[in-house]
Image 1 (tube, rainbow, N blue to C red):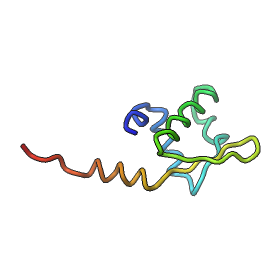
Image 2 (cartoon, rainbow, N blue to C red):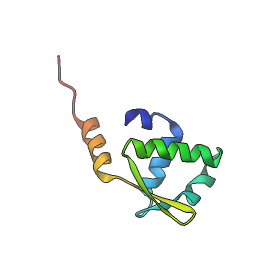
Image 3 (spheres, helix red, strand yellow):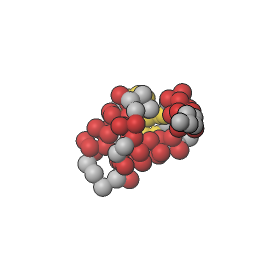
Image 4 (cartoon, one colour):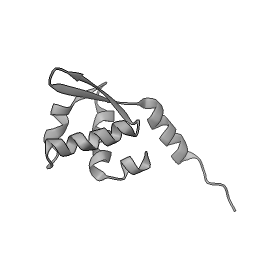
Length: 85
């Protein structure tokens, strides 16, 4: 999961998806980047495989939303202090 977030494009995509009210169309994500559509699709696939986002195809477009349980798990992991010693 952390490997999926290590790429700046994927981190920005996740931020945009999480910020959306419910879900967001890939057609709204792609124009925000200076990379090709297939590159954005690849990054979204990595985020899906990491369990951070999910999606649904509707006609020619794919809609994405974040998976709150996974984001909460990451937040808990990051917030847990490391043992001393």
